[in-house]
Length: 167
Image (cartoon, rainbow, N blue to C red; front, side, top):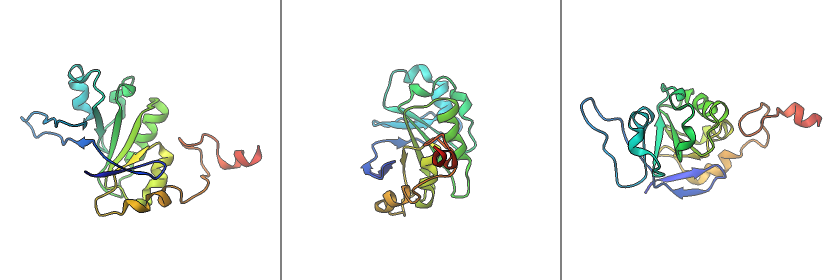
């Protein structure tokens, strides 16, 4: 079973399966365990998934989180896919989910997630991280807390450093 890193640097077994988007004409293939499905497909079949705590959604970097406005807290887990290291749109999606839409449950980074990104993902509101398979999860705690303070306001603190120092 794959591993996932929590925002405090702990490593745990990941029981969630990311379900790929089906090809045209195919139906969604649901596994017997907790599943993350594409957000637009969850929305289209919302009545079939209502009340289930074993179904979450994932956003690709080009998806718009606005499609779930007012519904985000019905989901136990939302994942944001980072298709490649250089694609930073997932950070914006995370901040929108937390700050504009008030998402309070687990927010996970999936895809091409590297140790270098963890501190910044944490500041944007991610709670858990599924590292790329070739990366060493045992180094995650150090990567998550590499900087002791952030200068800018973010989801982890709404007060910038200069204001924290002044008070």
